[in-house]
Length: 434
Image (tube, rainbow, N blue to C red; front, side):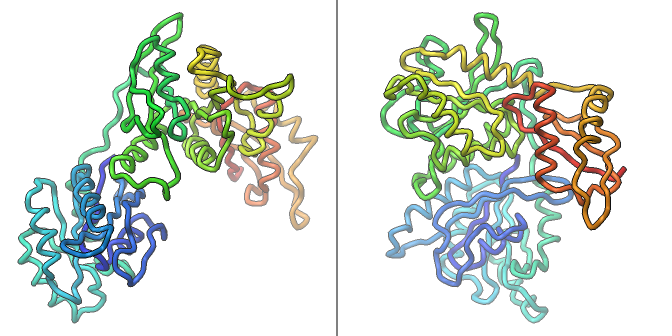
């Protein structure tokens, strides 16, 4: 997906513009300078074209702020990654020496630069806009990020210069498995053991893998592509420029996967960040297999694995139909079992159930267990079909779909899982007017 970077000195309204573009209040907006320390990512679309937006820290030159170098580095890295740049300035203060410094850097890039003159919230301020052509850029747009005026004209021109979204070239018959998890849980060791050779650098230092790396595997009757990702830590712990981009690439690797192998450290269990990764995969409708690595280091009795699995699935609820494999990448324990589970889940994700089979099986169950009546109105579901999508989605047609509640939706999902094998795959259910 194309990337658009928002840059400029502190306190010109970059975060307000970011929030306006992504349509939600994700960046902190404050009158204090330098509130945004790190890049923040969001997705936006305009006229049917999707793109990623990066809100950078304010560019500062010659200040005593301890974050100055880090913020400046972030801006420069954002420029390396971006396909277009929105250079935000403040109509109220005019061109400042810091604006000149930013412009000097931006004039060295061949990428499209749009000067966004912010805080133009009335017609009197329009006369102040002409001054900003002195920065040396052709595209100058007056906007008010707070109330949204002028942003439509800006976006109309922006999407014209963005490259087309790149489809990954891949053999449709070969599933893509992405190994994700926190740093230092053993993702690279797992891949090295799988291939029987050192494909990735392995170290006790967390975060050794910076980029996503993709390999093709074709042995023992198994064929797939596997992607090793950088470990994803909580945002407050992500303080290196390179690592921040690693996290973005890891998320994209999850978005491009068929199945996500979520690797946990057996000694630490399922932590908050593991759940975040699980949720990214679930929301993107990816198949999921949970790998509990370093199982050899855990003191075990006969019921340890059962209790451990129950604890994991309690945390992933309500999506609990997920395979859990206890393994040791270092000791080559259950490596191929993990892959077999992933390939099974990849097949489950492609499963199509005939409409006649769905209706013959589910409608009698629905008749015996109808949705609860609402305000004396009885809900009748007459028909069900699987939608023609890449992941399992089902449409139930009813007379009053708006009254069907979440508990009944989960009941229907459980019935689908009971009668057809969708182990490890999120299911989406929609209710439509008959």
